[in-house]
Length: 249
Image (spheres, helix red, strand yellow):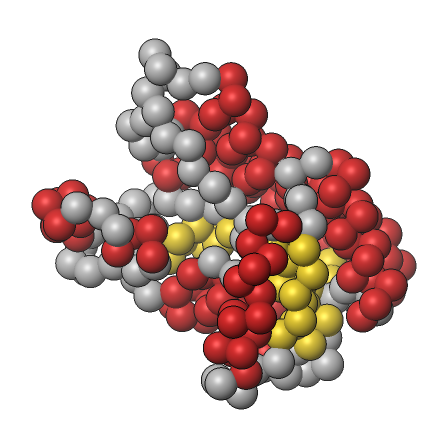
């Protein structure tokens, strides 16, 4: 697989899955730019050094993808500094879990804005450039809970399901123009968030996964690399599940 000399942008690139995706795309020869929220700015230097220690050069640009103005400003800054975007991985996401009875407007809006609306906000500014150049790879990181739902995650499940609806619709628009649009839906993955779970909760989750383990971020990055590859020209509008058999559809 290869995406040599392509410019890849990974939103939420400093997260557990985002970091693995950045590393993999850099190893495949891409020039990689990660985005982060301005509140994460104090982590950037250490994160960049960590990746350099793994022989990966990744630039970081801060911005708020949860607003139309923030998303457009961020992508325009990246294009101005690094050039046209060839690969976009929409990986930015948050959780604000609550039952429907207790969920607040703020919890709903925060998740929808960050996980779903951001995909539109950062994709639209670079879409015309991709279609005019006849090449583009857009990969949206959804979730198994966008496919099956999850108790206490009406906001998150709705946002993640919406991401694939966006994928399918945009795939039609890009199909004749050399731009593919696909979704990857991870199951439970070994990240700092899942590591912080109580042991009994973690054990119950693993017990429900047919492979009897959580996935590794690198396994999600493998799926992203496949879809981002120069030669992955005939896969578009797909939702690629990487969940260890947790949900088979």
